Length: 163
Image (cartoon, rainbow, N blue to C red; front, side, top):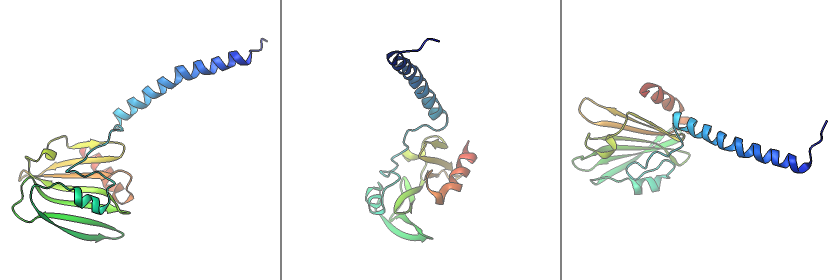
């Protein structure tokens, strides 16, 4: 039996890596695009999931002045925004926090709000965004972090319901 030199074994491994790595990367890209993709959803109204409460309040873009109110939800909490006057495109907002990070955003929008446009379900590896159209023409936009244990059941339910 012929014994190979260390040099020929090295080139065999290099050739294997050169051939297998691109194929594996291609399969990963195909799986990502098929099952939700690795793209990041958002920001929505200036917010991104993971923001802290002060940053979320500061960054929430509204067309009219509004009032904020905090609500405890067990160990978590929410900050609700309501307009002080007549609502325009955004009628209400609820930002939910788990361990001090924004993990859920719920907006009530008029049908002419830019965020109201789009598919009923958007998925990424990190989050789920749904739009539900009401009979009065408003749109309920819900954006949830997929990694949050508090919202895990709701994430699964929304994916199943909107597929």
